[in-house]
Length: 99
Image (cartoon, rainbow, N blue to C red; front, side):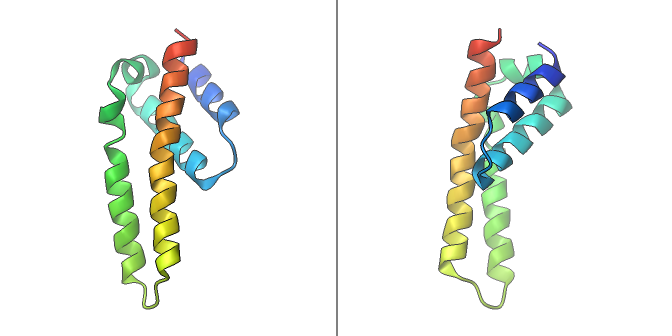
């Protein structure tokens, strides 16, 4: 499979939610930076560690604001968590259906 084909599959299968857009963005970036065949052979658990940093950075950025809404923080962290699910789904889709 080519990088272009994998990216096209991911982009065709994402919905317009923030969480899916974030997952698709990181999956596509990972494919481009490593090559799809290497990406497919790497355990998904290694790929999703980047979402820990994303959540941490989001929380730090929001906490720097003078007035922070607990709801805004919670929604952002839920979106990041949901992105992990979608990233794994993209990964499984590429590995399962397109070998």
